[in-house]
Image (cartoon, rainbow, N blue to C red):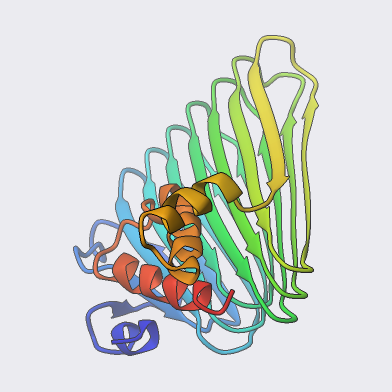
Length: 273
């Protein structure tokens, strides 16, 4: 089964936007398929799960509001060339967890506005660019009030003539004391590809814990040699190494069997590298 077949199988509940409250809350995850304009509001204290899937080329705007104590677990899948802007407003005590996979040429921008104390924000994202793909991920996380937390992990792989880009900004406002923000970007370049990784911090408060890091590297030749010595062919050894590299991001895809299907797509793309 493909991701598109699963999404359209009825296993998920179609969602075209609106308010998710205690009356409309469901244990079945919601799915917005190829949205052009999607507005989502999660009511106070409500927990929701949402899949946004772009199986066709789309240009879209997604706006999400998490009211006090709301929790949203979100999976975003980009399987075709898409341009999507996602804006999130987080009120006091709200929690957002996003897994995002860019599996083709796409340009995805996130603006996360932490507007209420004790808001928690996590983005775990993966991009794989092959052939002539150009995958771009932009992130602007804005800590506007005290005592909020953000965690970002981005992993990228580019091969052949592809280009990958990550630009991430963590902004901490003057009054946003006791901010706790971490941003990490880890990337692998293969063949004649090119990756740009630019994490940034802009901090105007003095009582904060903020860090960022970025690496762009290549395959581990010693590990490949080790596997080859144990009878694993080169193609399989390279695929296993890269699958291990992305695993800690893919594991954040919390919706089974969707996360298994994402692993299958990742594995299929890696066989072409």
